Figure 1 (cartoon, each protein chain N blue to C red):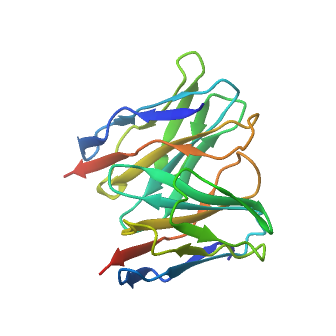
Figure 2: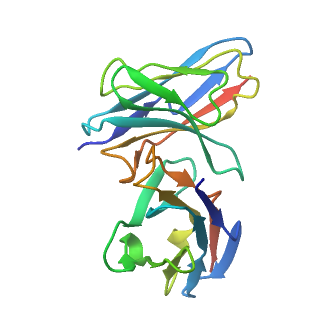
Length: 112
Length: 115
């Protein structure tokens, strides 16, 4: 079955460390997205990519970085510059502009 | 700029009662509209979408929504809820004529169904 796989489901990070969240899709979608979700704040866009080797900052890109070397993969790195990284992170993909997203099951990141 | 307002952050309701979750949007261009559901510690699942055509849209799990252009609303309804409908619901809008076409999400409504 086609879908989006996020790994790991739970991730613990020590302060000062960088961590990378994986997102892989086999839907042949061109566009991919990363969102951060905090209680009561809905979904906030971190980065998005509409084509391989190209990506744009979203509303809260500071302290995060991404790459898009393959159509299927869009990993997110949470750097030590992100001061409050504890959150639930969601990856999504879309077949085209404005046509709705397919979401992964999320990664919960906790700073310890 | 687009925005989405979900008027209720929490909606408690008894099992088998009807429910309406409200969503209003603002946009200067034509839009696509979506409702997603999220169960605890999971991703979002598409319930239904409005792209064009009939303003009454039927989705999964017995939910439906009506697009009202004059009131810029897209309220979600279900005539009889079940315990299993307890979840968080997100309304989203996309301006397909805009520069990005990205979805803008509301802040969510937590539906709590009580026995």
